[in-house]
Image (cartoon, rainbow, N blue to C red; front, top):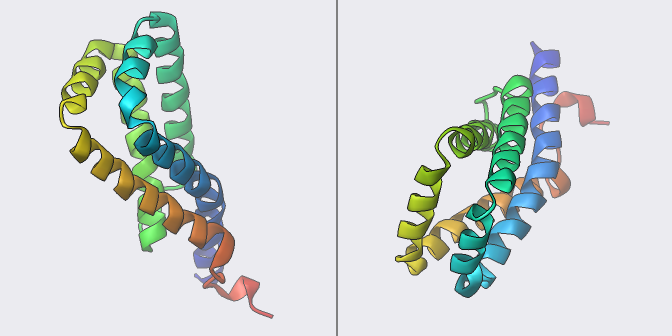
Length: 145
């Protein structure tokens, strides 16, 4: 039981090390570049090949997280697992019905302050995962001296 728990914590920590900084940097950049996001959205969806490849990559990374991290034992583990499902769902939607994502993005741009708030929350999640992955002391016996 202890070995399984430490393995779960190690895996969560590893995913948090990757996802945390990525999420914090990308979402903070979206907030900073919000005035240009409408044009970026238009440019992105103007090339269907880029949309399809991006959807496939999102789906792949989501499935990787789902395959290797289905743990719901701590707040960080829950966030990592939910991010996996979110990436997979978003990737699948981009591949199957990209116009739905475009419509949603265009509608969201009409409410920029709410979008910024949402990305602010995602930035905080990224900072939390960065803390868990890189700074916090592990909470399992395998790392104790």
